[in-house]
Image (cartoon, rainbow, N blue to C red; front, side, top):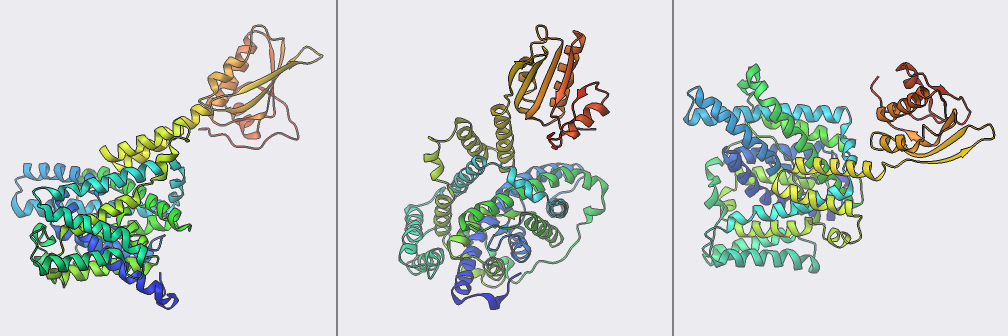
Length: 514
């Protein structure tokens, strides 16, 4: 929550002005994603307002902007196709078909929101830390390219004025902050170029040409519980999509939070953001909206325009509602080219340019992760890209650490000691077994784990396997410096191993299913 009395005049002005810029920038995105899903533009606009205001007040990061997003819209497209096919089979068509599809979408928003709230309550937001830096670089770079590519559709069948206006917008966005930051460059670009187009009657595409918002003037979101919520069949159909929406929304929101944390050198609350996002999506579902999540492009517009507090994101949400319900004639005359130019500059600002130069000096594995996640983000899906990045990173880590070594020497009594070093887990268990010379070793063998660590069930099984191999040959094996947890697992599993009990035994836990 924000306290208006704690704001300095500079913060107050910057938050209000940057919020107004974002409010205008939200309009074409909300409309575009509504068209993608196949619902009325007002659904996307309601989503941007409701989700924006809820997350601005409850969110874990001041200044983050949430609304209808492409990553979530892609999932909803698949749902809409499935629902449309089902309803047509039951003889539903026309307006009733559109209403039916929207009912399933709002139900998805409620279920996805509930799952996100649970993620926050159980403090699962911390797992965003498992996403490695190369994967974040890839995500950010891929998203920057996707943002730019999503603007290309506006150039179809356009005249030269479109290109000139986009170029002028980008010049204003690039050079004006070097002169003054007292007024957001995006707001100057919108006001000045809209006036030029209006005064000189320049023929170019306006927001009103894409979706005449005047039809929605004066209309506010209204409370309505989806009738499908009472249908078990509907819940079964929607749940898989709701789960994907919840995961994609959490990933994009928490990565946006991470990016803004790095830009501002501060730290937001991931778990708080999970609860805020879930609450916002449930509210969207109850007021006729679709699910959404944090918008990295608009969040960066807000941040770079000086919007650092919760007031900025609140102004963006409330400003959007006022624009749609009261000022649609003004909104309709804004050139699409100006908004495209702003989004191009957002794309430029989002791209992690330093990662290109770092590629030469990165380990090959990390460079591969950056490139892979970037490509997957562009051609597949954000959620899949980040998941792939985590999996690739985990496999690379496992491979790089899948080495365990041994130094050996023979005692005066003829026994042989293997002093191990390195982690013993699923990836290194084969290397572990290859270390030992079971046939030629003496009758007494000591395996010392002082500089090693048994990490999982595969490591425990490897210890049991090598012990059995020695026992079959009539040789005795003693295990030294295993943790109490590891000894307990071997004993409880019926493994007949011999341990030593020493004061300097380690005390780590082993990942094992009892």
